Image (cartoon, rainbow, N blue to C red; front, top):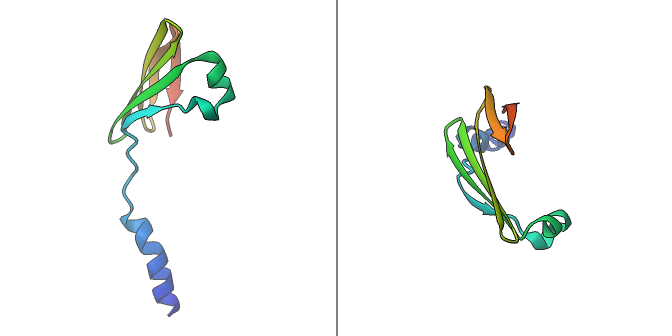
Length: 92
C-alpha cells in the first residue's frame, strides 16, 4: 500500500510538462495601486519557444505609448535594451 501511495504521488510529477506562458497578458489596474497611478493600460505579449522567451510590453498612459521587447534564453546571459539603456540579464 505504501509503494502504491508513493507511486501515485510521484507519477503526476513525472508526467508534467514544462509550462508555456505564451499569450497576451493584461494587468488588472483595479488590483494594483501603482499601475492605476502610472498608466491606463499595461499589456504583455509572451512568445515562448522551448527555453527561449520573447516578451513585448506595452504601456499606455494618456496619449503616450511605450513598447519594449526583451528576449531571454534559460541558463544563458542575454543582452537587451530597456528605455535606451543596455541591460544584461540571466534567466535560470
